[in-house]
Image 1: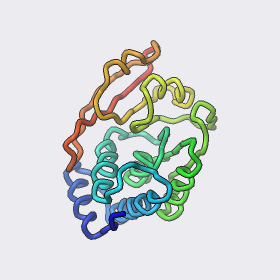
Image 2 (image 1 turned 30 degrees about the vertical axis):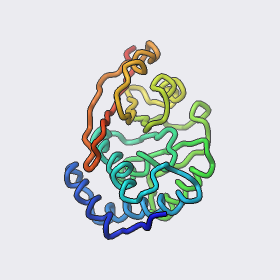
Image 3 (image 1 turned 45 degrees about the horizontal axis):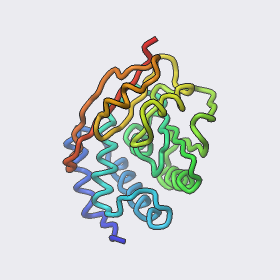
Image 4 (image 1 turned 120 degrees about the vertical axis):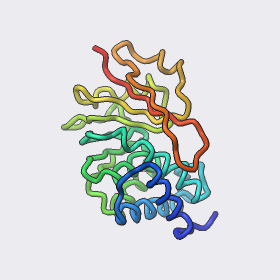
Length: 215
């Protein structure tokens, strides 16, 4: 396992944040580094991500999720479906502390990790659920439901649509923007925007898929 070199990763993260024009303070920078350190440490036992290299975790995970932050402007409550190791949910919660972020995953060891991250980073705006999203019931629905490399768009919408507030939207973080997935969406839903995003230090195609109700 490669050593987590905080001093080497910090400037890469800081430069990426600057490039993305995100206004994050010193505490948030520290929380992001702490999160990556925890992800790296737990990954050796819990297999949270296939990415093993700490520097790649910074670009492929942290900056990849940070590149989507501006899309959540104005949202007050967000659900991250199939949250896994906390991407993008934990990163969103750090970058937007005023936003309530719920994370759900069916795998207990992943939610145990997310609960640990919440505690160690002091993320009061985070809630963690261990459940299947189609069975989740909440007192207040979400403005935005998001996922990163979670499932086919139609499954994503079908399984979690009951949790979306009226006028809310889905934002899926995808690599390519698969046309066949868009075509399989239920008739009540449409892709309202397909937004390419550029992730600092990552030469790969990335898109945000915005899905809204067309009724």
